[in-house]
Image: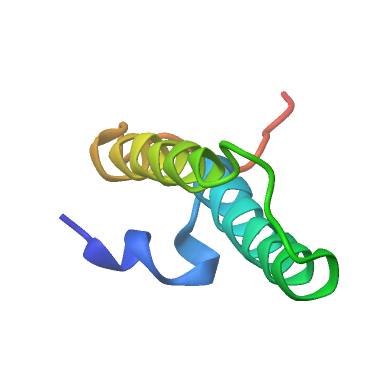
Length: 76
């Protein structure tokens, strides 16, 4: 099992990449809301739970998917 598929940017799949982007963007929005607006909407923290779950699903697909599956498209 290649654990670098959990952290190496070039080894991440789409789910993992989207989840990490979502986490970073949510964290940035959280900071802006906290410091500029002074409050965060109710339930905002659930975004972190959703992005983390999305990352976990993507990681499971990446780790346990077919290893011989081509990652790029071949047209015959």
